[in-house]
Length: 111
Length: 117
Image 1 (tube, chains in turn yellow, orange):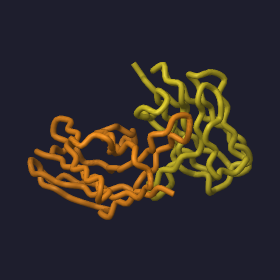
Image 2 (cartoon, rainbow over the protein chains, first blue to last red; image 1 turned 180 degrees about the vertical axis):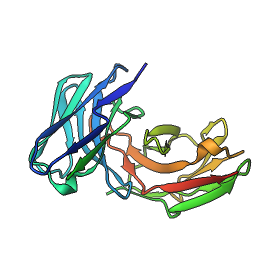
Image 3 (cartoon, chains in turn red, yellow; image 1 turned 90 degrees about the vertical axis):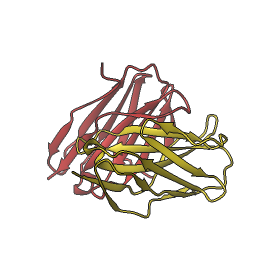
Image 4 (cartoon, each protein chain N blue to C red; image 1 turned 135 degrees about the horizontal axis):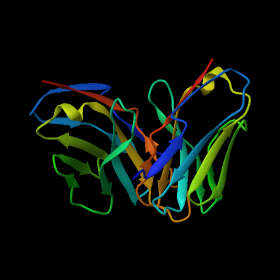
């Protein structure tokens, strides 16, 4: 059984397009996160939601907009994609301040 | 701001041998958590081990153990009896123990571990 799932696993698109990545967790957790892993493998937090409420919003361009329709889902929508957005995006979840469990990642390539 | 430093970009070990990966961190908090995550080529982030700062006893998980030195702000990972499947990027991560505040993980830059047969 998949604990944290993301779709799609791979996303290739042109500059200027708008795309979404979906994340779902079936662990009953109340907090979900988006992390970005750049080409040098460095991982950095982007957003965090607790019970559908935005808790963390790091310095991320406002072209990135997270949406949490319910506690089990956290989607990431990206407008006007740029070359620098190419990265692996990880969704994670936790039960409040407990250990975070990660999804398989979505590799986004912007051409 | 909290920072995590992994000073070894790459390490290698012979199969069945022991290897230690280093991690230091900087924080003014007294209560926090430390983690080691493993990222194999499949890119899945897998939790290896977790340590609560208030616990003096070092965490262990089978062949994985940590040496947690709170005063020195050091958190190294020891892998015993290394196996080919241990080959991966290893990330050290820190998170403060706050209630209703920021629960983000702060990661080091990772150490790439190669296991030689």
